Length: 289
Image (cartoon, rainbow, N blue to C red; front, side, top):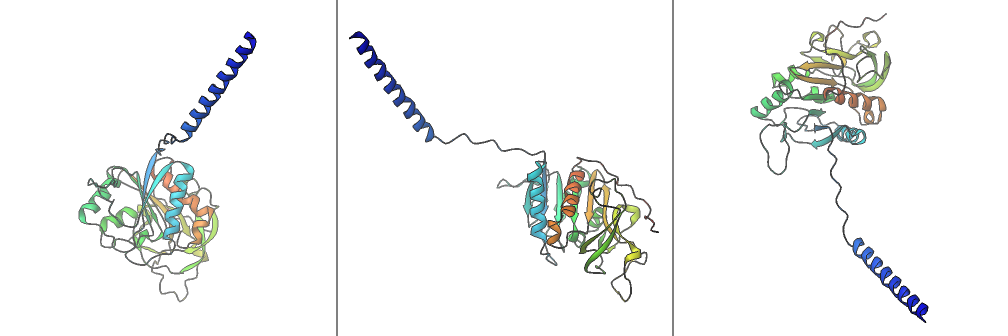
């Protein structure tokens, strides 16, 4: 009889325990899980896509590519803007960040005179020249801010026509040791629109890529203005403490699906952020046989 009673008590206890565990699990399922802490990336990149002149169809592709590069690599987070509000050191409200927050600025085929007052222009140049922030100019970034002399000095010049429009450009790799172009062979072809720079000098930049002058057609082309036939496709330079990279590649939407172009800009951003090393010293033109 005693054994029977003990068995009843044990069964009752097990039923109560099971009910308690089930109830606890049910209650736990109603409680939201603790939020995950936001991953803080090493660097912060600001991408500007404002256009006050010609509007390239590839601007969204370029901006999205830079966002994806940072997200997939985990090396930076990206703020994308089509205005210039954040190009300031003034404190902004509404949780907006300013230049003190960002480590690099990317102009994604910006065009024309951007909506920046004198204080913003001074702040942006100070951020690069004095604070050592990086700057990457994509394609039409050279077709920007003609009325701002220091911008041209910082980036290296301005747009002065594209003599061959969009074509199969014969390109020479002048510095295969530089991280942004090390994946390119010595000579290669890319279908893109190559800008001709004005107020530009090889003595003031480190040319990375250039057009092969021996493979270009100059006949009956009034858009060819450089008598030296020196058409740089990409270069690096220093501006005070800051690092600057520019390339004319990236005109087409399709360019941003090209692994070579994406890798070039990925490595360029890494370089201006100080994650890799590469020369900014000017050098003579690479002679061709």
